[in-house]
Picture 1 (cartoon, helix red, strand yellow):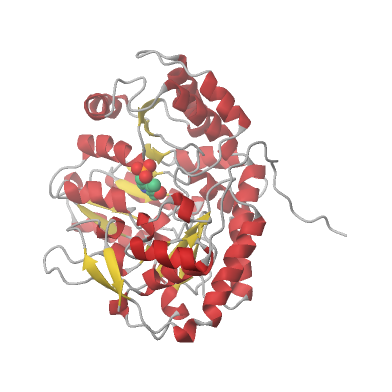
Picture 2: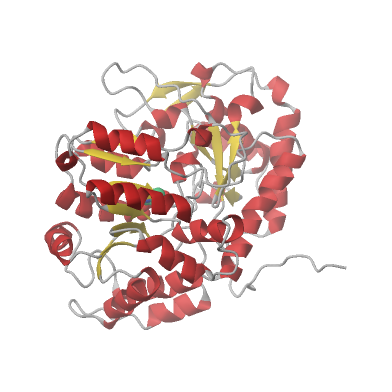
Length: 458
Ligand SMILES: *Cc1c(COP(=O)(O)O)cnc(C)c1O
């Protein structure tokens, strides 16, 4: 008999979580104005709000924390991280930042100016925010397949090379400071980009003389998918694939809170000394001195260790198989979810789940509240609340997809938790015909409203 799969780690420290009653949850979610962000963590049994900064560090990472060097300049922790970045990712220069968006802020301060165009696959919201804040424009060149949840394409994060080349032809070269490639592509559902596509992007970029920057939060999960799905890479190690991926990039921004399995941190890594020097000025201004830039020495140490662990096949296999396990259980119950399953999350297609609900009543948010009421599970709406109003007309922008994202923290929950999530969602699915009313807005902020919006039942 074939041995079943099991996690590539055992548990050394635990944190208690508490179940609650439906009555308690009714009261709490009402007090939270039906906004899941307003709940206290004690009011949540299984927290799938995000996989960002919510991972469990290893014994070796906690050990590295104790060895942190807190010297203002020239700390050993800085050199430790610098060596790891050089060895694993191949970049000579790096700047630590306090998280991913800070890396974007620093690098874009050096590169982006008003009127610029930044093409890429679906830009992450903070990336887009930092582009638009500088009155520049993000142009989405993702392949069309990415926008259909039913199509099973192995690399839905890929750039459509024709769309990219058309964009590069349309604008003068000096208006395009770089191309940004998000690996994996968060906004299209944690979908990977293939090496073949990275090569093709590089080729077009070289033709026009434009640098390529990777937004790299989930680069290791991307490498895992390449190993599993792309011909020619099945016998390569994750670290070899990672090296190959970044060989097509001129630089990267990183949110270490994802694939580097730390609770806070980020960095910029670059090949060009000139650009490094330019960015350094902004890093010192916004983040901190060159050798700590927004991070404590201990956190840089944990990050260096996390980069190593996060690019080990056994860890990644455990991680991705857990996400896949949840996806399969939901699919077996007939629940509509995005295919293929993403690296860090399962996306429930809320429009298909609740077809009778009008779009004006926030379909994915309604599903999120129902799942919370059912079992104390917190997901996050990726739908109309997040899409926000049109900045000019202030009309609601209804996105093509209404998704409930169930993001799985790294090394935190067991498959028993996945079973609870699957059955809870099935119970909601079984009573979906009775869910005929959604929500309306009581109050909302002028931008990024989803974090603080207050709702009431229709
Ligand atoms: C999380 C994330 C960011 C922003 O990083 P923070 O650490 O949250 O500031 C940028 N890009 C991608 C793809 C991300 O997933």
